[in-house]
Image 1 (cartoon, rainbow, N blue to C red):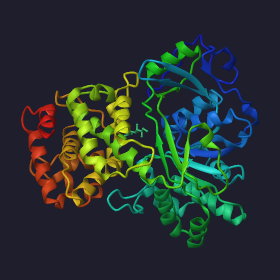
Image 2 (image 1 turned 90 degrees about the horizontal axis):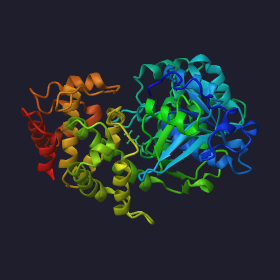
Image 3 (image 1 turned 90 degrees about the vertical axis):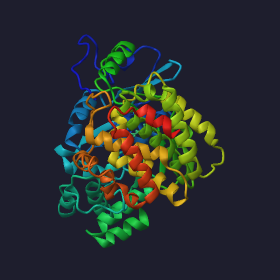
Amino acid sequence: MQHTQQSNVKLNTLNQQSLPTLPADVDVPNYDRSSLTAGIVHIGVGGFHRAHQAMYVNELLKKPGSESWAICGVGLLEANRGLRDVLVKQDYLYSLTVRHPNGQIDHQVIGSMIDFLFAPENKKQVIDKLVNPDTKIVSLTITEGGYNFNPATGEFDFTNPEIIHDMANLQDPITAFGYITAALIQRKALGMKPFTIQSCDNIQHNGDMTRKMLLAFVSKIDAELGQWIAANVAFPNAMVDRITPVTTKADIEYVANAYNVNDEWPITCEAFTQWVIEDNFSDGRPALDTVGAQFVSDVTPFEKMKIRLLNAGHSVLGLLGSINGFATIDESVTDPLFAAYLRKFMDDEVTPLLDQLDGIDLTQYKDTLIERFANPNIKDSLARICLESSAKLPKFLIASINENIAQGRDTSLATLVIAAWCLYSDKRVDQQGNKLDINDQMAAQLHDYASKTEQDPLAFLQITDLFGELNNQANFCKDYRQAIAALYAPGSDIKTIMQARL
Ligand code: CS2
């Protein structure tokens, strides 16, 4: 986010003491925060966590008997220092501004976080917290990339230098895997129960994936510990959903006016929220079903629906929209051609891959998605959507392309998105020549391969860690070449190219 100085020096800081001064329409934590204990330790306190899980827990804490389920945040990255400073100053309180499509705005202050540990400053404190018997759940939003798998093979990446470091230095970890393993070693030695490890990231089978990655890591360190984890640690799969744009200076200013306090790191999000969780926990769980979450025995069809429609839909708009010169999702989807393209992509290239779900009408789900994307009050930047595309697209989009190829279906709408990603990575400008803000761990490699496209139209597909065998799929390659030729033609226009594929 854009971190600013206090926007209005005359205002109080948002904290426990200033809560009573907030306007009456702000929903403030009305429970005794001093009586809470942290049953949940959450690693990766980004905007999404604060709009989603922390909001559910905030609702839960309003109910008597939930005092042991507050959250202790953990930041593993040096980049989390600023967040720590703000949260400490604000007694871990922050505002959540919920913006409906019709202009209605709900004002909330979230009080479910009661502590935040900044790991780079005190690693032992984080490990001790994970070992503390109060900690029943370790939840994660460490982004798709944080799970350290090779996107094409799905196997743990032992070549990552941070992983190599952690395997040899568990007392001085860097990654979530290192911290969790260090804590589980102690729990096992002390005869304690393990905690549940609950992924809240957009990965299909996020619990299974976390389990597989942790077991791969641990089995090279201590095989017996691996067996103990396999037998005793629950990794519930979950589908998580709430669109949460990056905080802007305008959000900080809005909060100063509407809440009459200074919140240096407020969160804004859409009204829609969903959390479907497998009821599989190692040592108890909060009654999140009393506050809107849903416990099910198998989350697979929900996750697939969400990731392949919503997240992939975002990427379709994000990459095509960036080339066109759009800045936000709502701007892209209110363009009739982009809306038609997105809908046809969802109907023809995703829906046939989805299982019918009892109680879910897919047509209505897709209608709702388009309404959510079009929310004019949520300015969700395409830069956020395209952030770390290399960690997202294999799961969101390339998986659908592969399934469609295997089932003999057309992939031309998704193919253009991959070709647009190549152009985006190569030229790094929109079609008017304006610079694009690209943030991707693989940006250099993406650029390297993409920049050879004019000599070899399939060059980008040679990044087999991302695309697997796509470069050997004759029909796909033929269509991809056409998409590349159209996009790279002098004076090309993305809308004309999209129109031709509808
Ligand atoms: C987005 C998600 O980052 C992305 O690519 O699609 O952050 C999306 O907004 C959330 O998953 C919504 O639940």
